[in-house]
Image (cartoon, rainbow over all chains, first blue to last red):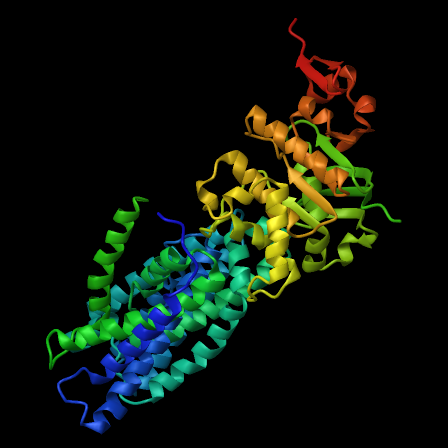
Length: 316
Length: 258
């Protein structure tokens, strides 16, 4: 791999992709741009959702990769997707008639509870805190997925379809309430992460070295875990467990801007917006006027692309 | 003027067990002190107590006249820096970026590197002969080069006291000599250095003080000529050792083959 150069032209390119992706997202669909209400009521909330969730998942991935000192960590490593899926699945199975916002809020709550459980499980024990978090996250993911499978097993077919649809992810916001709801999580979460990008560099260096350079490791790690959980938990609640953004985007940006989190986090956040805007546009174009689930598009496009990058870098 | 490091009547350990008891040590500006002793004697633990990390400690430790238990992490990091024995960098950074990590206690977490930060990092890289490596990735360096970059990063903290945990371990002979010459030069410029080491022979030519730890205590401390005695070292390491002074000022420590 060539040594990463300074960002240089990267910011203008990312900015152009963001604007282009946003406009594309507003333009794509069976009805033309002339239908103003479609653009304002349906596509704008959708594009905003892509921007908020994409940046959140990518930034959250960066945080987890630093704290766990593992480039393959994702926001879902902490059981976030399992928690959200379990909570949303439980609500769907319960047969209660609820608004889409209630489903979003329930998913988010489930994600945050899962992170809390992972944190409590990892609090005690010997060895590195990162490894304990990783093991606790894997356990919560497995147990959560198994309980969800039980729900699915005993659900009537109509509910089963709904759960499966939810798991595939969607950006189809009915109105602006979901993006506004997500903002409640993104603003504090992103503010905390961006204010601590230098600390992420230190935490990636390991606990002892970070502490010797002045980091209050335990406190900073907890604050960043909470921020990461807010970002990813809110996003998963809002759009479902869309994979790969939190893993692939930071990975690609690392090749372009280097490993310094002061550059990596903002670059990944913008690239995450672009990734979701493009994936959602593809999801709406391929079988128009119907649309593909965004989770499927993201994994189908992101998976092989990630594999290509790994093979090309010769690291695996 | 206060001593740079004052350790008096310090006991320390993990959990309920004390690893070291009633240790005293005082270091002046420009001292290079080596902590020697068998594995598990508490060498690293003493360094950790000065860093207030991982171990509990009782007694008094002061750094530049400031009580260690009253210092915040940031305040301590501006006085003391640390080079671990082993270190794997989680983020993929260039040498220059790695050295700049040492500026953390002097700036806000998110802020960019200032002109002063870059200037200090450049000075530290030149001092450690790593300037030529500045745009290489840290992960691609040899073991000896990595050790020098870590020292440059520790120097970028602008400490008064540099702690190193077995700095010469796993280095070839040339890199060991270069490392000791570097530490000697840094000390002559006024930096105080405390390190743990097993390379007693080569280190003895550069150390101004030696502290010998064994069986949870400091069994001897002083100048190399006061401490490096065959009877003392044989007892500490549980092995017959012969100690001879070399004409260059270093000591040769060899096991007696009987």
